[in-house]
Image 1 (spheres, one colour):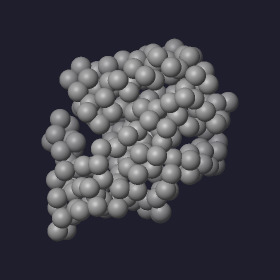
Image 2: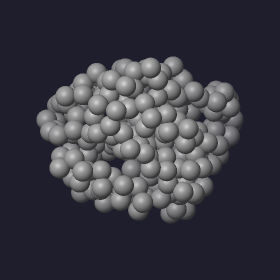
Image 3: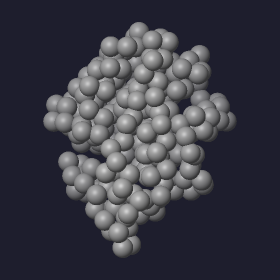
Length: 229
């Protein structure tokens, strides 16, 4: 099986640093515009790009794992092309991703040299090991607020709440108990409305659950992968 990770809005493959170290044959994709190429303007376009990436590399028995916006892409993949996937993992995401206007305003008014935006962006990582902060900050600067705004607007338009019942793939839903961006009720909605989903709430974790509580998250992924064999 091939485990493929999709990052969230304005983020990068770096958000799966601890998963890539643990799952040897896995792949974390940098979506277009993050930071090379041109970002896609909606979840559908990201989906088709990801599908092209996977097809070109002839990955087989794909287990797609998406965080936040990556989760939206994963849900759409499961709806459109279920026969191409073995299972899905949804992390800190939802069937509808309503974005708080404060996040959008921060991207639209980033301050001198994007300083205000960067400070706000880095707050999301306050529970992540400080060793990671310099490289997270550097990668964020490479992408900039425009890319994050683009992605957040794409997320804000995303809504598959009424389609979840059509997804029959084995699904693992993960969420941090203290996630305010995609709260536990989003994860609960996914598990309640999908045919074959189980949910796990990771105590004390916030939005970047896969970086904050990576040992627990990796364990959950391992259990899920084993259940598909």
